[in-house]
Image (cartoon, rainbow, N blue to C red; front, side):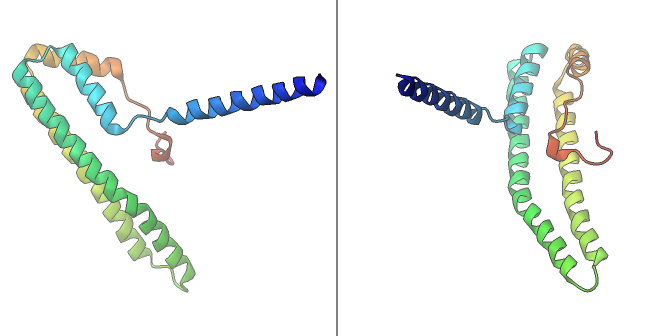
Length: 159
């Protein structure tokens, strides 16, 4: 009888652990496109956009999503490229600081290009709004506040 009770308890523990693991595995952080979509939906509802404004905002959202997806695809290979470049330089007799700085500068330039693109898209969105909608948006921006950065994007002095 004790053996059966022990086996049942072990089975229950294993079942609970497996179910917890499965439920945790399903909970992934939202993709940036999902965040943009939710934010735009919230703004659309809060700002009472007209039908024409909604169409233009959807176009802006699509442009942002496409640009982000292209940048993400490009970044996937860059991480390995930088790691390989560092490893290669470490093995050399003389470390090529100019070459590494050039590689890192190119990476920073791409981020800067994306930032400038996002500001341009924000300007397009701003141009669509009426004075009343801009006032509502200003209040919403203050309410939402800055969103914490994902852990991987934080670095020295970026907290």
